[in-house]
Image 1 (cartoon, helix red, strand yellow):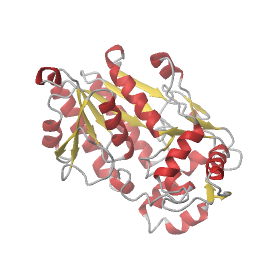
Image 2: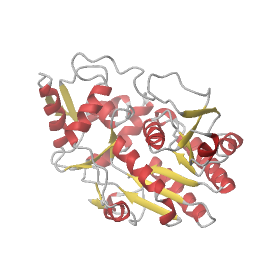
Image 3: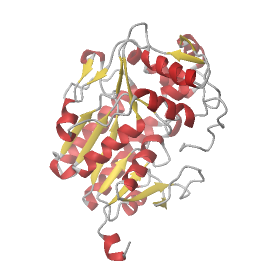
Image 4: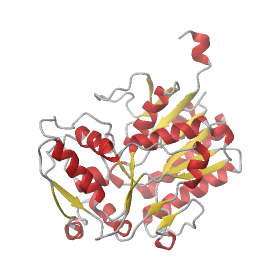
Length: 338
C-alpha cells in the first residue's frame, strides 16, 4: 500500500484490545480494511494470538493524556476496557470512560461501547428493548447505567456514541465468561457441563465474533446513525436453559466423549465468595439466571438488514477448541487474549 493510499484508510483506537471483545473487534476492523491502534501498558503483548497489523501504543486508559495522544487521527474509539477480575470497578470504570469521552470530543471521534444487560432490572424482563427504563439492581449495573448516561450527555455535545448490548459472551476469546468459568473448565476435556439456569428458565447467549462483526458493521454505517444509538443483539436464545448444554454435548459426542449435565453449585459461591472477588461478583448477577432475559433485536435488524449469526454448534465447537476442552487439544494457555 502506498503512503497516499495508507493515509486515506480509516483508523480506530481500541481500548481493551487484549481482552475478549476488544481483541475480536480489533481483528475484525483490520479484516475490514481499517488501521487499528491499541493502547496497552507495556505496548504489544506477548501472545500467540495473531495481531499482525495492530499498532500497539504504550499507555494507560486511566491516564487522560495517554488516551488523548493515542486517539489522535482516529475516527472511532472502541471503549472495551474494564478493570481485570471485576476488581476496582468503583474507582476505575468511570474515570476511564471520562478519558475516552474527552479524547473523542477533542478529536471528533465516534465512541463504540460493548454493553450488557446489567443496566436493567427485572421489571423489563422477559424481553428487553433498548428504550426500557434502566433501574439496575446491582452495583455493576448502576455503574453501567451511569456510563451510558455520561455517553448520552456527551452525544448532546457532539460526541457520537454507538452501544451494542448482547447476552452472555462465549467464543474463542471469551475467557472471562460464564461459558468458560461456569459451564466448562478450560484446559480439560469437557465431560460435565454445569447449568446455572433455574429449571426451565431461558437465557440469551452471544457468540463473540458475531458481536464484533455487528459492531464493525455499525461503525461502517455510523454516518447514517443518530448521535446516540443503542442496539440489542438477539444472539442465541436458549429457551429453557438446556440448549447450550445440549450443544456442548453434541460437539463432544462428535469427538467420542459423553457429557453429563449437573446443576451449577450456587451454594459454593455463597461459601467462597467472601474470599474470591470473581465469585462474589458473579454471585451478584444470579438474578439473570433465575428469570428469562431475552434481547429484542428489531432495531438492529432495521439498521443492518440482518444480525450476524453463527450456527450454535459451529460456535460452540470453536469455543471449546480454543479453550482446550476437546480431547487431544493443547491447553488454551497463551491461545487467547487475557
